[in-house]
Image (cartoon, rainbow, N blue to C red; front, side, top):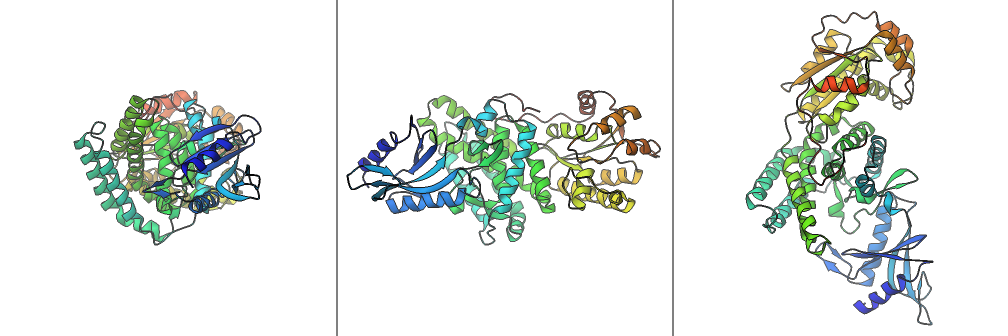
Length: 519
C-alpha cells in the first residue's frame, strides 16, 4: 500500500459516519469517531517495537487488538472489519469487494468519562477508586500466567533502556541524577530478583493489560472498564501483576491523587487475598519508579510534537523526579487502632491510611474483614454467632499479626483495626512491628454514642450491634499502655487528634498540579 492509498482510506472514513466524524491521530493509528461507532486503523508504519508496514500485518494487528481487549471490554470491541473497494470503485466499510485496509470497530463511548478526564475534574472519589481496585483484580485473575518468561531479566532490560534514553536528554535530566536513579534501580533489582523469580513460578507473571494508566480506563454504565491494552508486543504486556498495577498507582500519585491510589491498592489486596502479595509490597517502589521513568522518557521524546513543548518538558521532569522519590521510600511504621465496637475504629483507620508513608499509603488490616475471609463470605455478609467463638477470634488475631509482620518486613506500613480488648492481643500486634515504629491508639466513647453508631451502619464488614456494644461495657481491658483517643465527637475530630499523635503526614505526591482526592 502506498501512502496515497491509505490517505484515501482516511479521507473516506472521515466522511463515512452518519453525521460529524472526529479524527484522532496517534503515532501508530488513526481513529475515526462517529455517533455510534469508532473505527481504528493501523498506520502503515514500522518502528523498533511494532511493524504495521503491510496490509497483512495490519490485519493481524487488528485481530490481536480485538482478542486482547475483548476480555476487558466485551461491550466496546465489536469486530475486525474490512474497508473494501467495490466493483464500482467506491470504498465501503464491511464491503464484499477487495479489502484494501482493515479496522477495529468499537462502540462509541463518552470520552469525557475516561478516568484521566475525571481525575482532572476531581471527580474520582473513594467509591470509584474502590471499584477500580476491584476491576484490576478481576482482570488479573483472568489473565494468562506465563511461567517461563524471565520477568526479572526483562525488567533489567527495561531499566537499561530507561537509563540510555534518559541520558540522551541532558537538557531535561541531569547526568548525575540519571546515574543515581539507575544505580538504585539496578541495586533494587538485584536484591529483589529472588522475589520476582518466586512469583513467576507461582503464576503471578501474566499477560496483562500492559498500559494501565487512567486514560485507558473508562466508565461504562458507572463501571470502570479497561481498554486499549497492549496488543503489538507480548513482551511489553507481560509482567508481574504488581508491575501492571503499579502503572495505575503511579499515575494517580503523579496527579496528586495518592489517597485514591491507597484505596485502589487496599481493595486490590482485599480482592486477591494472596498472602504473598504482602511480600510483593517490597517491589512496589521499584515498579512504580520504573513506570515513572518510562513516562519521563516518553514524554520527553514527544515534547517536540506537543502543543506546549515547555509544559511537556516540565511534565517529563516531574515524572523523573517522582521516579527518584518512589525508589527512596521512608521507613515503614505500624499503627494499631483499638477500641470497643462503635468507637469509630474503621472510620479512623480508613482516614489515616493516606497519611502514613510510604506512598501510596498504608495497608489496612481489619479484623472484621479477616473474619469474613476465614469463612469465605463477602465482607458485608453477616456471620453466624459461632463465627465469634474464642478460638475463631484467636485465629483472626493471629492472622492480623502475621499479615502486619509481612507488610512491615516488605518495607511498607500497615494500619491494623480491631477491638484489641485483651493485653496479649495488644502485645502481639506491637511485637509484629519488629524494629519499626509502633503506635497503639485506643479509641473511647460513651455507651450511648457507640450504640447509636452501630445502629446506623449499612454495607459494613462489622456485625456488631447494640447488644454487642452493651456486652463490651463489662470488658476488663487490663493494663492499657496505648494512647487513649477521645472518639465521642465527629470523625474529623478523632482524625485530628490521632494525627497529632503520629509522625509527619504523607505528602500528596509529586507531579502535575491538582486538587486533593475527593473523600
